[in-house]
Length: 568
Ligand SMILES: [Zn+2]
Image (cartoon, rainbow, N blue to C red; front, top):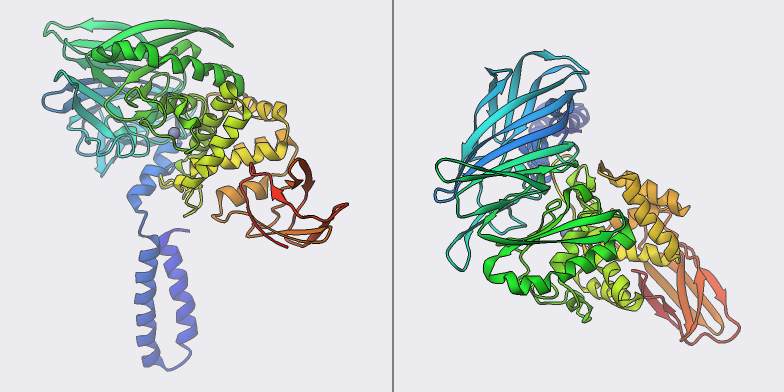
């Protein structure tokens, strides 16, 4: 329901109720209530504006066409912090229509739009441009148009979280420029259909830089064009579907080396780009990329972009999961900028950014959310991938301790799933709580062969696709043979931690769940002595477990993310 219809309904109900009584007095009351309701309504709905809806929903001007290909060309004038370029957008017409929405955020502006050699008219509403074709395009046809633009792009406030373009200098005073735009959107630096549900099948990225610098973007470097004025254009070609925020530009005085890794799908090309001064330490430190790829190919299946290769690229901010071009700014330290997020010691055995951001090649770049409300699909799996990395290299105990250790970062402030259709995200709990949710599910399954099959199955089923939470939930339920509807409702759509109430009397152990959503019935493994365990099936009703001796010890397997309230 939209804002205005909701308000009208409330007013209508109040009017019917009040106007049957004293006409004038009730009119004043009615007006007072209407104003209060209006203020209340505005307060309740204010967080999202029409602009958010245009940005975050599949508007009619977006729904009729399907992206096929972008040819993006951008010239970076680093001294002026100014960019100028074009994007030629190829698309299929699904439904006949005449008006197309293209997004480009201020202060950038579209200068003209070309279609079959002729200019097209357009209007602007904030970051949204509505482009008019001269006639309705026919369904079933393929077409393209070119959008030209220029301006000073948004500068990143706190990249990568508050993104845009970062204009930095390296220690030698050379420019060090990079884009990062997850959430805020690729339209911060180039015109596009800035909605995650639709991806091109492939893309050409042409970036022009001063002659002393190079650009590293996504995919493979096809050619370097040398211009008479001394500048260079780097042509990078991505031969796979790519989401908007996965596209990136990184301009610096890079040094580079290549290698290969014999992976599940054959030979994977690896390329590393770092600042010259960091070359020696990077050669050693970036060995974590090999360990990461080995571990994740085991758990998730082949690296999803063999034909584009894998790159690790140094940037002037912490890092981001740019597709086939993972960006790195963890300062060559172990852990997260030298600290252990789990406080167990296991978080310092590896470079957090290499592991976490590389996990996103599977969970974000290959399997991608359609709506940012479902961002847990990227972050919960990438978070749990950290534990799986430890599992592969250091064993199950290390993995368990790590993921349990990160619970200290869970805040349970709001649901993990955010509001839909407004480019809004849910709680930060999508990281640590999401990882613990997946660990809890794995503990429930108690079958790592099946668990690995589920992870690899998700990657196969949704390979190079955009997905919804519903699709992921349904797949996991089917693959495990369990109805996980209530389980996901509990951890993704509620903030309460399931509470197991337990009490013992002699040899009787009584237990039940509280603080759970309807139908939540996850079985639990409990320990009734140091090395004796059994499974119980709690519901919201008290049940008894009879031991063959007095129960003086009980514990829930700590791998389940539940709370336990016990008494004797
Ligand atoms: Zn992440």
